[in-house]
Length: 125
Image (cartoon, rainbow, N blue to C red; front, side, top):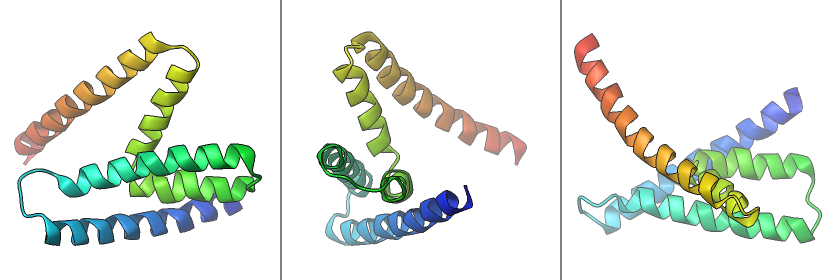
């Protein structure tokens, strides 16, 4: 268990640094109100998790490396990649209704919770 935690922590530090560097680079390229950095890391993370999952399904990669990449690196680079893969898995398994509910609840509730958290912070002080 300790080894897995260290592997995730190591991968997480890589993903966090990559995300920071990507944000810095994109912010220098685009000065707009649109969140280009966020959409870029989310889309790149989604592409990466799909590609690597497909690649790893045909080529052996140790469980430790998989954990480091999927949970550590991509998990800290963006959790959106996991969200995309969860939806892909539901779609692949024919659970279209579950996928739709998951997408709607995750996105709509997340926005409302963000607003609620902001409002709560104003009240709490």
